[in-house]
Image 1 (cartoon, one colour):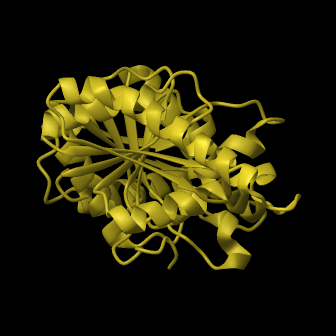
Image 2 (tube, helix red, strand yellow):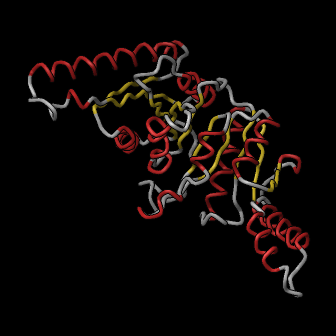
Image 3 (spheres, helix red, strand yellow):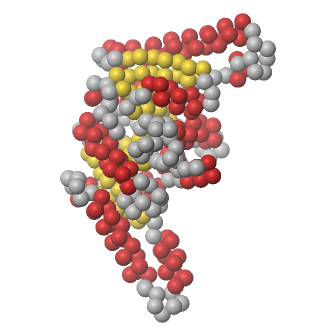
Amino acid sequence: MEALRNILVIVDPTAKDNPVIARARWLAQKTGASVELFICDYDQYLTGEMFFDSAQLEKTRSALMQRNAQRLKKLAQPLLDAGIKVAIDTAWDSPLHEGIVRKVAKSNPDIVLKDTHYHQLIRRSLFSNTDWNLIRDCPAPLMLVKATSPEAIKTIIAAVDPSHERDKPAELDHKIIAAAQQLSTTAQAEMHIVHAFDPAPAYAVSADAMAFPIAEPIHEVMLGLKRRHQRALDDLLASYAIPEANVHLGEGDTRDVLVALIEKLHADLVIMGAISRSALKRLLLGSTAERVLDHLPCDLLIIKPVGAASGRD
């Protein structure tokens, strides 16, 4: 992640509160970055697709966009009062995530901030679908800010996968660590590294092999597996001066390991990587990230591999 000079903030026009504004103000004050507030809006009943287009429809659309601009001006004022350079922009575009991606391509920000909310399973297909699509397609680092998040970031967890079990490019781990170091320096925050591995497949293989005399005892298989993951983590961090107490190797599902560590450390931000797949495998992209998004009690920063400018590899 590049040094923060330009921050793009996605504002939800339907939300009563916008906690993402406070986070943007804090980041801008820490880095000296400028901020652009952006609303992407759309109403199918005002497009002329369902009714004949008319001057009245155009007038109504114009009034909606003016209200959005006025809202952005109001939200921008506290940032301006704090000495932050602020710009505002609105767009009539659909679907929402594609409109946001087009804005990102135009503005070329160093980071995109958007608020996010936890939804029960029956409701999550609407709002979190936008977040999910942005995780896949947003070409810039994407920070999803929870409604309950504090303004300041005090503890950061960088989630890495040095074993590359999820077919993640090796260089992405270094990008994740670099982003964590940059933000921890900027925020004077404590940084931790975590790698989680799931021993369940090895248990299953060992259990199937127990009938054969040459099979290794399960505890030996597990010990060897843990050693391999520890060695991969040590190799990844060999060139970094990270205290041993701040490096964590966890056994189990990534989500469960992360949630437990967040609660233990009272972390404010998790940084993790995401890559895109072909259309047939696109769900594989966020098999971890999507589940994490809906379960982590803190903010999430998504980092993409080098060359993922379009959000697809």
